[in-house]
Length: 249
Length: 323
View 1: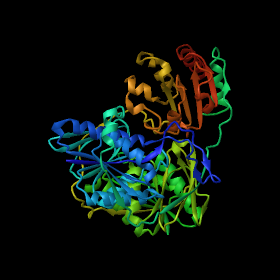
View 2 (view 1 turned 180 degrees about the horizontal axis):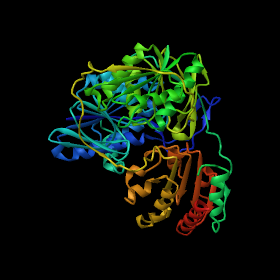
View 3 (view 1 turned 60 degrees about the horizontal axis):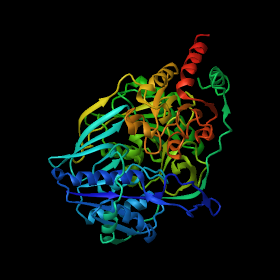
């Protein structure tokens, strides 16, 4: 069984976000780039399953759509333990373009489970996984919080409103992953970093697609008014403010 | 032409989110000079369907059938895209929740329709179509232009006020028969917590962080939530420690919520946590560190030890409630 984990390259989630060129572009100076948190958890889980011989996973690959400057992020995925990688050489403008490129990699390869994070922490679209599934006409399961392989079948737990749903999915399928699938992302060890240098990154030519949308500009959220402090000895004051000023209780 | 809004139901009932979607679609339709149409999938009684007319929806399509009682992304996206074509929908509105997030991207590919996900207001202009959406996990808003003839919007829960606008509405019943799809995931079991207010539905949320110090100290938080008719949440270290279930984890990688009131107790307010709660209308912070970043996000704050402040706050609330 082969697993493909789709990874996105995003600013470190602790980065202070700033914009440039009249707020039309992200200011990338000083930004640390990381694997999108949900993609990193998906990769971690795929590697945990591969480590367990009873799951029968032969290979874990990663795929990424981005220019050559994003290769350190792919190397990081290889250092964590992915066997090989695909990079589509393109600068996508929206999720549709990303999914269209990833679909070509899946069609050309032989993958049983394709994992995508629920969203990227930069554009918060939550779209690539579902679009990829539709391009491929594969079933998809979204909101996955647990994934196990038993007797060659994917046993999945996904979150639904107010509870959980347990499913078994035939392969191939696209799994859209949220928190819970792995506790902590796996960290690259020195040996992994050394080995990653020798692992192949296959360069894939982009297919022609037009974006459906364009991001025009960014703006920071409205600043909130300064905090009003209440004496800790008189918390009744807080209740009063919430009742009469904010009118929320 | 029309605005088609997918109004999800829960065991045959709509909830506030459904009416937020209906209100949004009505205003969007008015702005674009077209008709709002609601689409419901699964068994919903006539009088429940008619509730949508209270929010300006003039046409309600109800698709029912034995084969579609259970949610399946492929089947549901086919039903929605077929109805969208039939109604000549140029705008499709869904909730930015689990189900909407699963359906919108499939619809986008089926209908060649651009998506703006996580919108909380109406577009700035409709031709060209420009709208603001959440980006960088709440640290920014992006203005996107949707360039396709059909456009899809997913609306953030609790971000758009209900607008009651009763109208005469017609109901069209559709029987779903021809939606056989290739074998997909099969549901083995479903576990639903009953009688518990869902975190995503709660208008008031009381949340605890590392500063609460142990699972045993959660009593006053639960009590406060109950008195306020709210739900409980927590920060990531708390769910990682196992003090609270991970379903309660609110933040960038956990749940993203937008209640009217969020009370953060013993939470320092790291960027990743704020990413999950920045849509809250009011934030109250209780923390013993006066320099904690949570106070920059909060409108009201108490600097003090949660263990000491909380019992007094609960008492004060009881006193205010009984007066």
